[in-house]
Image (cartoon, rainbow, N blue to C red; front, side, top):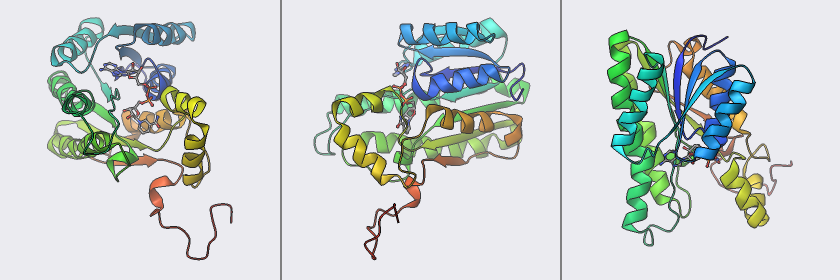
Length: 263
Ligand SMILES: NC(=O)c1ccc[n+]([C@@H]2O[C@H](COP(=O)([O-])OP(=O)(O)OC[C@H]3O[C@@H](n4cnc5c(N)ncnc54)[C@H](O)[C@@H]3O)[C@@H](O)[C@H]2O)c1
């Protein structure tokens, strides 16, 4: 088991990538704190983990509030005595061109997607530093490495996540704490699957833009997070890992020979 006896907390783990990570961590021997503002999703994930023989606790919390973040770290410490792995993963996204985004939408995107990641890291460090060991994994995105139409606030947040990952990595590198990010491309989690139901044409074009010609599976991101959280990544810190079916490797330039991905 790759996370045997570790205590791990995952935000936004009542669905999608966080859910896959929670189940993967539990299967690999970790006790998992499932944090989500969606109580039904969080409770479902915990009961599925327990049914499979794993250890998990659910905490309903909104990571858009710093007080709730303090409560979530305290919950892990009270229940399990320490925290070995923090996976910052929850998200809120406002949609609109730069000139159309509202201040409220911008602020909430930053609160949930960036301030929460920094503040949870800050609180987790208080628990990890005395032990001289810990791993933090942040869910960034290829949207943190380049721009997307109508996702300006999300692009800013994910670029910020990539860079606070670097700073956390270098600042605590000699204290036993590693911090890394995963940058998924489009993954078949509920938000994208709902979009596919409503607008199959849009998701069809997204699939076409991915060199592998398909969406990623949540498990394919959980596998990367597992590696980064585990001791196998003992010399990896301040890094980001792209898992996107080749999307980010493409410049976006159409082929000069007129050949497409089927070539
Ligand atoms: N799905 C993709 O295509 C994709 C691509 C790149 C990056 N990501 C990133 O992956 C992460 C997970 O996304 P997903 O696709 O699994 O989404 P998802 O909607 O399936 O899961 C997100 C979970 O976060 C929870 N959440 C949202 N706001 C919260 C808050 N304030 N407090 C607590 N919980 C909250 C939701 O209730 C939900 O259960 C996000 O950081 C997202 O930006 C996703």
